[in-house]
Image (cartoon, rainbow, N blue to C red; front, side, top):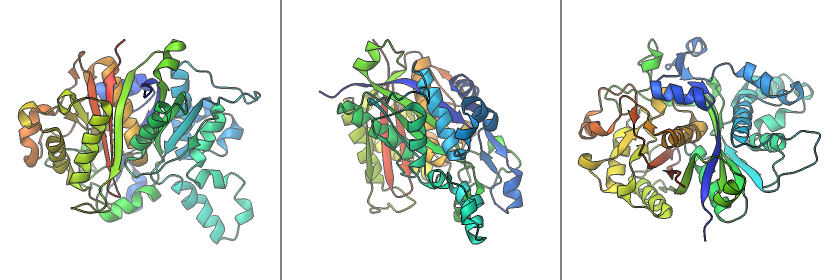
Length: 425
């Protein structure tokens, strides 16, 4: 028997809010976290807006002691703050460094798309080129290696189960959650933190600007810049942040009297193989549909049971194709299509953190019974106007909402889909 997996804690540090209360309020209000960034103009970026969490330095200083902060760049900081929040939210205690106790039943999978690029660009490259290698300090390696993020959190919380970092482009956060779910299902862990993180750095965003996939249309109107499913969308808006969900096997959660937000029914990850229209930057539509259908099968539900979709939906040319892939996989046309929304309309595309930040939104929606709006798409793309009634432009109160599908489709033709269900005793 597969163990049932539930969510008992969450932490989020998003461009439009830190913590569940602030983040939920922003989602309900349709409040954007996209801001004008003068540095991007100074660096000659075409896109000069982005999503960056606010007040992080003050949060870091409240959460961690100076010795810990020395080895925490943005990427690690976002993950560490979110991890501590999720741990405490689940009713667990952050251990003391004086204790020798290790939690052998708990682990973490947290990834990023590009990671510590800011440390590499601002410290490693200039100091190496200047011949000042010995002055870089002993914490450089852990800040630039991908697994430094999970390792740092593992140390903060004394985690003794699997502690690792994944990287799968925009699908990273979803993939981490899927992998954590499968580990718990197999009885290899009782609880796992899972999610994604991504620092805010021009050095991370520069390649996308060079590819001309970032929007340059709304530099003077940042809050209107991220426009998924819109006819006037001009590319995605870069974002950053972190989020972690605490996944736990149902029996363990109930035994300790934990509050349960939602159940993770199932999921799937795959790749389109860069065939049949798929490439490094475009999804193979057959791969996308296979991923959705496999997730539905793994969850033990039918396509008709899905009431809402939190899409990948980045505000690029791919949005209409994504909607068409969903309708093909679900065999549900405009007349009975589920609600479909894009959290990226408010936070931008947070790259490796995107899936996790958006999954927190999904779980909050199920727990509180609402659907947040997809902002900035009053002019729905002409190829999907038939689906307009399925796009919420204002918050929809729906206390009976039960099942939401969360998708992520990333560079490399990689796909992920998770199925969340409202928790009912």
